[in-house]
Image 1 (cartoon, rainbow, N blue to C red):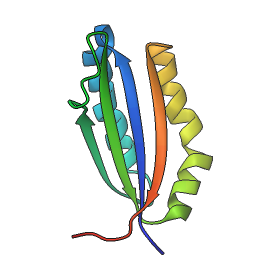
Image 2 (cartoon, rainbow, N blue to C red):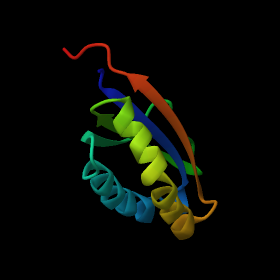
Image 3 (tube, helix red, strand yellow):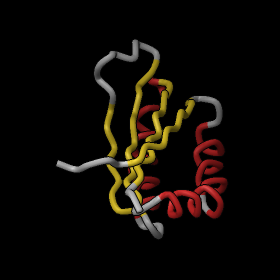
Image 4 (cartoon, rainbow, N blue to C red):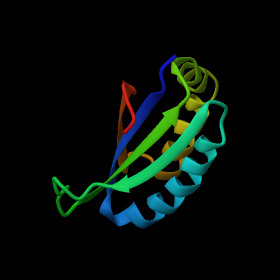
Amino acid sequence: MSAVLYEVTLRVERAVADDYRDWLHAHAREMRALPGFLEARLSQVSDPAPGDETVVFCCHYRLQDAAALEAYLREHAPRMRAEGVERFGARFSAQRRVMVVLADY
């Protein structure tokens, strides 16, 4: 079984970016505490520059395997995604990717 990287890129209106980042720290810690999650990393994209209107954050979650990601998507994702929408509405957008880890160096 191979580890999986789950990447979430978030484009956030600059006007709410500080509040969103604060919320995102707590959200990432909650994700990290779920079964099968091994690591969480939060970054702010600097290049390419997102422009004056938005801030872009990128979350990388490392999971033990695809089954752990499937369990998250089935059992936790709807609730956790809804929390962000309830708090920030349409002031952000999310893009997600899943990658299989081939090697660590």
